[in-house]
Image 1: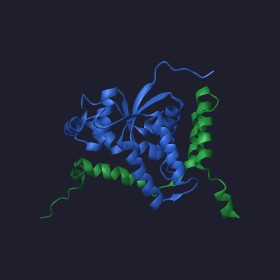
Image 2: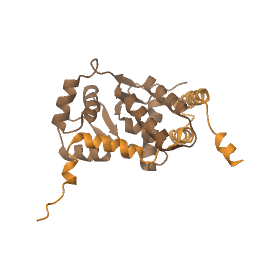
Image 3: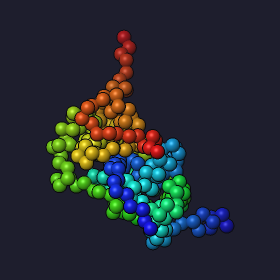
Image 4: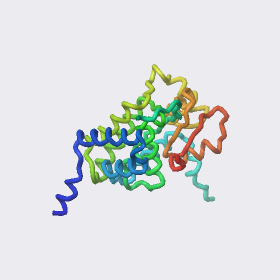
Length: 77
Length: 160
């Protein structure tokens, strides 16, 4: 029963799009707050990414070149 | 009656900001401002500018998220629909048309950032927009350097 409960929350592509359009229109009219929109967005599109944003930013960091400055080890003599 | 806004603030949005809106395990101090920014863009209160590579960056992140992570309340198809909706309202700047590789290369070397960062910064400079990123290290680096010709840059956690 618990499994069925989580599956029932899934919106189809078309349902999501219709709801998004409705909420954007409500935002424009001032009938919905940005916070309410944000809560709905997170509850409709939530993914547990397991650190993928960090990994995404790390790739950018490596591409810069200057990251090595902070990684340089001291010579032990 | 729909409210009309005479002027819209222009912003350039990094792909990391869009990704932050859907990743539930990102800190709320990043995820919430990112989603509030998205709400203002969707409502037409902010004018978003992005490079053509934005879509590829987000899709790459999504593939990784769906492979490594765990979707809780959505499907890949629905997230892609949300991305397409965003792309339809954003101003997409295309390579060879709105930005040139040589110009971006020069900017990357001048500002000591990656080529990818420089694409966003070059667009922000051209359209006089603020560049928003979830990359705190990049933001701090640029603030420390104090380049006089740099466009305004913001870390998404400070967006209100």
